[in-house]
Image (cartoon, rainbow, N blue to C red; front, side):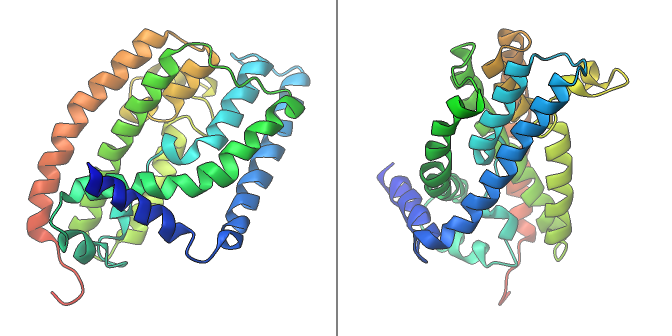
Length: 255
């Protein structure tokens, strides 16, 4: 465990090698995206638009989604298998490749959680946002969401291995699909034409949208947890199998 903790620490330090000032543009972008979105949803709901969520739920859903964005939709360094030389770095160390990906990703979350998420929580009372989860199941749901996020990311990373030089295209497609179908941008229950009922059972809905729904008290928390457990049980064996097979086709600079 110590070696993975040290790997996570290295990843966190790597993010701050240029100094904390280097991270300020990213913090500003997140902040200037989140706050206008809060005011937008407030204006929409106060205008009389009927949605299946109260104003308090919508604001909390959006605010917490912004604070925990990196955890709700996991993106590991695996997307840079080839183009960024991640492959050689991971296989050059005598520890598990997937373990390293997990540690590197978790370590990489720390700077933004400390510099953006933690200070931004102080703005919640000023914006009229409630930051108390409606159910303690939220924390379990968040852990299941993160676990499933790693499985999904590994599958997309393996797809980029299969397509060789199309990793950028795979990354863009992945971002579009996951952002839309996970419910992190627009809550799934707001989808029109009866799509909400069907879409809540697909695997991406067990990512960010699931813990956010539990946080604001939308839906049956136990049913959401069962779906998350089911998709973890289904996708992790598939991800591990595909990863083992994909290693045979891995190439990097130099052969």
